[in-house]
Length: 423
Ligand code: AMP
Ligand code: GLY
Image (cartoon, rainbow, N blue to C red; front, side, top):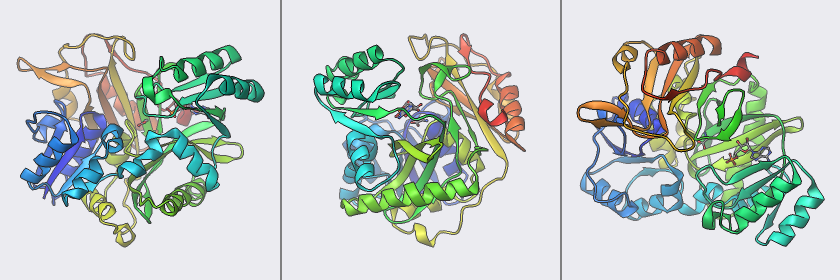
């Protein structure tokens, strides 16, 4: 079988690695990929990264299954395009991807169908936004409607910050067109957890829970990043809570989408706040999480190809229950100094061979490249080390031990990944 993975981050390296372990897979391509995916997958030489160029490639190479990592391709309708060519692709259609690409769409769906989420209002002019903020009080959360690469959400502790956020977002200064409409939302407190589920339109199979660490600083301080680490399982999520999420969020969301005429296929990623009155949706994503995927896939023992094909072909109900490694997994991301602000790239990455020899440790590349025969840094988040262990504490120790063998100029990582689980 011939498989194409679209994307070039740690998530895609983890996907490519897992797919390469399947006896069904003969050839894998990954575009645009990175130096890590390049060691196991071929990198297509394409004239551009556009959807139609990728579809032409998939047709020419007889690709049997395409898996899409990043949301922007899904929001652009790559799944619809591949379907129109009769190609099998794992991911939601453009309409279905609105669950991530439009926060207004997601909130209205949840409100109409009684799916637990924060109270909110939708605004496109500043005066009504201001009146709502003043009536609701602080803390309050301001969100751009559209995709904003993680920069669209501002949690405001005081009214001045909230008003400034609404103004900057609506005016287009904050995130451009994505902010022409905003959602202003009740602040929810509690622990955050990610529940990702494979969906085929009707059936949904949740994956093991995970928690990521979004901020750059220790103790979850400082600006948000693409994710500085993750762990799975999450001790606060027990079987009963998993069932509540399935019964009150995942299944109702798929049913709600079907009522709106949308068959949701792909990963439905529920970003949840575990509040005192139960789990509530903070956001939906229409794809695998990064770095959640880097702690979920090392634990998956079922053949990923079977699952993704079954989801793409509406056959998830026929799948056996998933087989999971009971051990814990912790992933720590190493970033370039300065990230998420400005940073310098091109530094040699040392120690990869030493880590490659460790069992149950996976180095997933993100911003890496080959230059003059050397592996160098080529992005903000450079790589992540995922390690399995008997429990979170041991997995974390093993991840940090492995990370200690790696080095590049300006290497930065948080030393507290998993702290909530260990408290
Ligand atoms: P998002 O980009 O939607 O994941 O939001 C980024 C982060 O903002 C989330 O991970 C939360 O930490 C925080 N956040 C978003 N919505 C809320 C909310 N209603 N209450 C509290 N925190 C929130
Ligand atoms: N880990 C957050 C995300 O994938 O959006």
